[in-house]
Image (cartoon, rainbow, N blue to C red; front, side, top):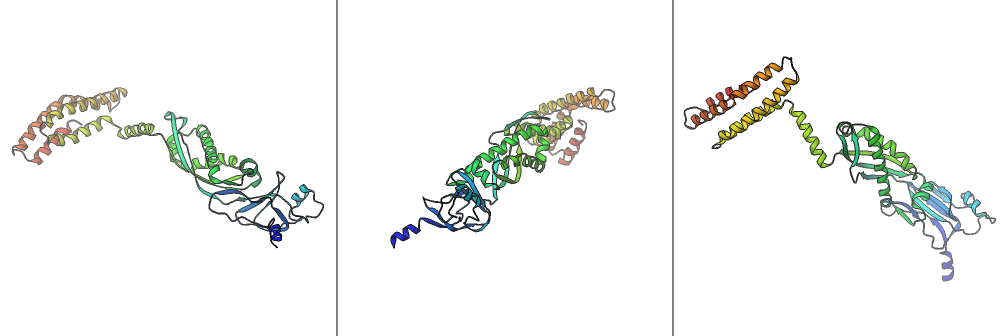
Length: 343
């Protein structure tokens, strides 16, 4: 009886795969020198495909369903074996199961910045990252190019190859697009679509289908981002002379509250107004004959003559406030009148 039980265990009657855990793409059914019984049952669940490999050659691929393995259901395998006993004896063949589920939330990114030539900033280095998803569509191609005769092949093993494939396509796309970095960062959806179109054929070469690709961020390295921020800040300032005068005017009340602050303020005020004067004169000389040139030059001359006088007057007035001779509102009114002469 024990001998009969042992013999029966050498024949496989049911072939199936219940996926344990997440991330397995290919799994070989454990044969252990056993043979598949004629009429055995093959169960292929949804999100799976099964493939028979006989003597190193792919024989048959089964889509989801339940099959009884006979000469009618294995015509290619039967032809390869060239059986003349109508499949009456057990046979040996490697059976592989493949997961066709969508592999979600796969991350890609540039491990190192990509150097490109930008229309606005010249040579720059860009970073980008995002997510993508894919699923297996061609088990034969995947078996021949990726998984091979491995007992198990996981998603993690393939992750590096796919990520590098995406980044390689991204490098070419950056260079070919000719789109300035600013426009590229502002149109990530369109950039993602272009990247998807370039990467999809590469995935197909591995027997995979790229389902989605999302660009979550396109950025510059930190040191270049600081330079970009400075450039944006300068554009936002616009009229440097008015900006400098505004900064000086705002700093006077703080200086007045500190002992000796107004005296020190005279140096800063003179420097600030002088800088504004230089900028104003440069702008006026760049536009000779315009209506704006003469007022700008006149304002610069007044500012240069009256700057020290304004500081001295404000110091005296502040002293009168401290002695109670002037009220704070009177000081503020006189200060506003004097500062208008600087604009």
